[in-house]
Image 1: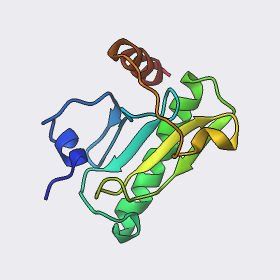
Image 2: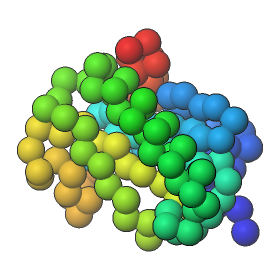
Image 3: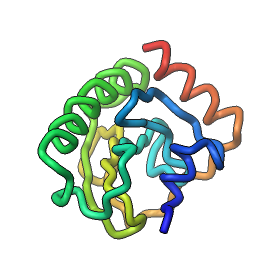
Length: 129
């Protein structure tokens, strides 16, 4: 069964895409912990990150590093936090979260509610970074 992420990959539903290539895509989380919270996923749908084949796993982390540098250049933060939880959507994904302290990456806190123009501004700033 297709995940919501596969529908984003197939352009069946819109997303605030930061960057993509033939194997991976990065887009803003629409339920962000902070501004700039980004999801990085392989285009191949595999539920559990540790079930990815070696090439896809390595490629995902290389792509993630590139995206994290863009986010860090565009969003005022101490660093980019990383989380791999894997329970919310049955499609391997990495959360990149701009943080200033450990509490900024607490997934139990309320998510931000951003307007479309805010998402578009963040997307543009990261793409241009």
